[in-house]
Image (cartoon, rainbow, N blue to C red; front, side, top):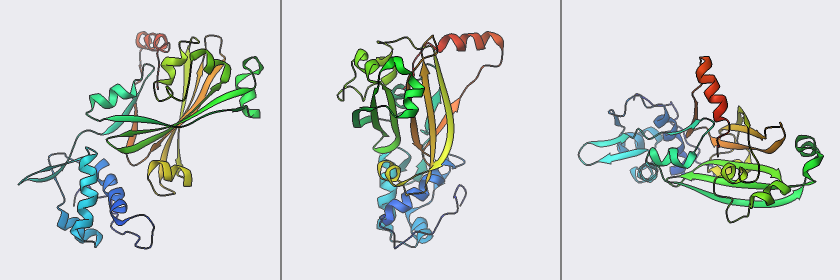
Length: 264
């Protein structure tokens, strides 16, 4: 069966329901599916592969159809859609607009909005001129009902207050609001791979130890002061990040000018 990732065993002793384990395995198949014109395996074939009932398989398939990753066509079968979860990273990033253009419905839910004392690392990062308190925001981003990424953002409380951040508006574009209080000149990103701990597994609806893509970030003003730091933790089985970089000097200058833009 072309496109299969080879996973066919499920853990019947796991507290994770069987249909969710099957969905997890099928997500990896969907990510590597070679041709959207090729029919996805039938429910019967999948039931035989995982040694479960067709009803259990249908639960997993229906969940993926609802998420927009599979389509069922009467008389023809099930097919993989071409609406992948890809985040195109650039200085004028608009995640909501990207997902909408790809036919996905994205939602952002604020998990926590806290004020706390700076850690020693944060004091060194932000500097003494920005006070001793930070605002820490955690958000869960989903598309078509599937959790995709856990966002963490930290900024000095004095900056957060100037920009008017509250728990009610923290689901909106953080960078767009931050720019109302301070000019932003540069963004630094770093991509890493890690394994989900218990908290990430719970929030992203994945198994503990599953792969996660981390995008760490800092945003600086024209004088080089850091105004915001944080990270986005993406499900490795659902989301990929894409970059497009200029190779000639003219485009590079244009990209440097665009760093005055915004990102989520």
